[in-house]
Length: 175
Image 1 (cartoon, rainbow, N blue to C red):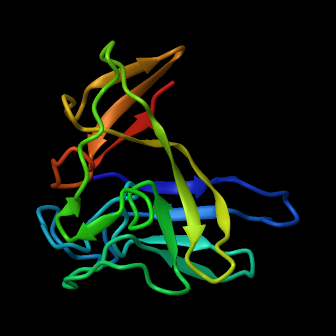
Image 2: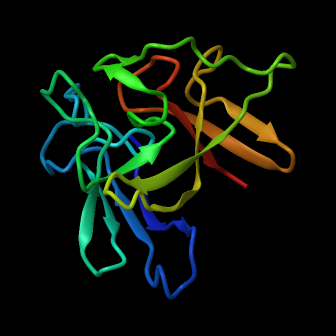
């Protein structure tokens, strides 16, 4: 299980984003078991219903890429999503994941880390910023608890709760 509680790295000034806070768990149901395999149970790498962003207007808005029980996970109006794993990122056209080819490691065996970017599906299409210290990584030829070193920094590979397909992994910055 992965959670996040802190400020994001905003794409704007303190006047635009005075308090850019993201609170993210794996579910909004407080008594759901750790072993749940419901669609809603999903961490910040592709959030279910347990993530909220403190919006610049002083309200909390849900951050959600997954909709439990729905057969067509299309983008909804007036919500916040996380790229690259949202329907606008890896272009999920079905509940089971991306229909494209898996993203492979580089030829030298290294991995590319992609930022987790919060954005709005409103008509204004605002992009709010990046989640600090977390990134998406390909799970192809990778596994949970691997430690990836890029430059001076180390990252711990974690999977999205119970999911193990190549597009359901992320890293937590260790140093």
